[in-house]
Image (tube, rainbow, N blue to C red; front, side):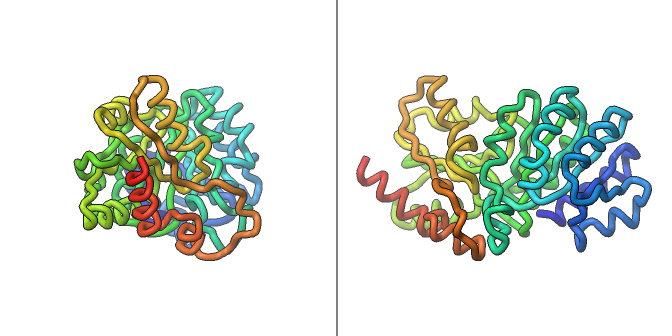
Length: 306
């Protein structure tokens, strides 16, 4: 998804001289092409993310559209106050690009895990939050929204991800539907949606047919889509590479409660502190029941016990 991002950025930068890229002294082997093609619109702010956001706020106030790029927890949690007091407070077109969803930096440990970012940033009114499920959707999301007047947070995977059924579709404020089974619904966000697709296929092989609702636009939330898909369904599951508090699980719970929907909710995500966990993202997800096969078994068990 990183390469899809940079290719989209190159495209829009060639069409709009306001587009800039600022990094926190990382992203190399990804950002060089932009740096070489637009040297006057590339800045390295160093390992100083608060300054990076302050710089981006000033550039946005001056008429530029700065994309600030770093590993997800570094670009969201470390400078959170600067995000709130800068682009959010002043409604400026700063584009915050976080690389690495969930435990994708699995060998680096908890400091590099992105497990709270959506929950923290969802508190900010006016901040658009986009978490694409695959490369094609990321490309379309960036190109469709880069001229949006307010701030945007893009939560991107560092891996190449493809979900053919999604067709790259993206519309701000809407969700995308895969399948139309009524035995269950999985509401998923981000690249971990690939595991939802695997789980749904396994369940289909077992004669249990469901629907996946892909929520790439977390804010504004696709409330109408979620309400419509959940109508008449007995059980909905949410899936995210995030703690189950604050992310898409909490979003769906809020929509169910506020609309009085008679549907049971089970949230799948990370539930405990991973302070002693390192390894590949695949192994950590499997250990926490978030791989496609583990999800299928967990969903089957819940439905059998309902």
